[in-house]
Image 1 (cartoon, one colour):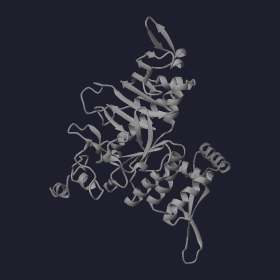
Image 2 (cartoon, helix red, strand yellow):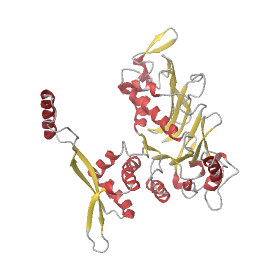
Image 3 (cartoon, rainbow, N blue to C red):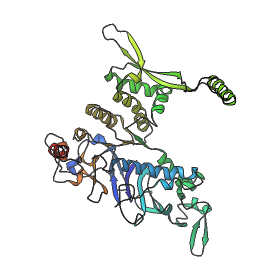
Image 4 (spheres, one colour):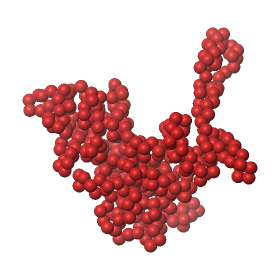
Length: 442
């Protein structure tokens, strides 16, 4: 499970910012216990099963989600390339004279294999300036390794997997077989380093998707409907509220737009086009599509038709069920940027409530959203609500509703009124309709 994540000098974030999944121990926050997971170890009482991040357009919410994905890419993809293209994806805060006045830094703390790990990495001008890994087995944190450039200090007893990848020069150890832009933990994991594999395996369970489109999870969900009967049964129970009785996965041949044979003046090109047509005919591209089944309540007759005829919200819900089921079943982490896009407020609430009730394990969900109607005590505890706001220097900052100790739960159980009035900051660009009207009317 994720405990906390911090970043600095990345995208719209300049100073160090941190998101914590630690549940508040205050008695005033002692509600919605179904939204927490008891840990009772490492000094941690409980962790939050979910968190929501609110803020104005261009405040930095998507950049925060992207930071988690960037760290994942650094750890898992750096070895896939012979050059430094992965580390070059790390963009610092650009609105300052010296872009590298401090390193771009990510640090993440998580629970895995009955231990707590803290991993961090610093990047300066396209190379890794620092990298570190600590673990806590019982109560005391122990350093496994700390890298500075190509030099490293490591725990020879607890992290013996590093021995084959270092050589000693004088009083210091130098890293071998690891390029300056490749994480040391990634290299060790490739060679089955016991603790390094735990780290990379954990990042494999970190999933970041966008709610603006279904790229990256649509096909995954379609395959689940076709191959996993348990998932299909679970989904259909949910979809009954949309009068959907069944889901059918159908295959169709995809026709590629090609010029007609004989349409080119050049005989060689036309001959090549003819061969291409023949190849495509022999190797038809199959595309899987979803059909939904509904029933006419008067006649009891069932009808099936393509999902493409349904609303964008219905399509997004169906495709999102795959990732939700997968992370709950496999106790993984899902970050959904722009979660509420295309969703009605009641559908947003339904999905989040469904997640909390279905998740009895160690799964976690983090969403970024705009819909202030989700700021309710019934849905989220105060420690689950976070805001992102731009400072006068255009730097993004993230902070928790718990920091506003003077604003405990309103009698009606909603925080949206206080949020829209500006009491928590992170409000839309225009403070009121009157302000917007003045700008539009000159």
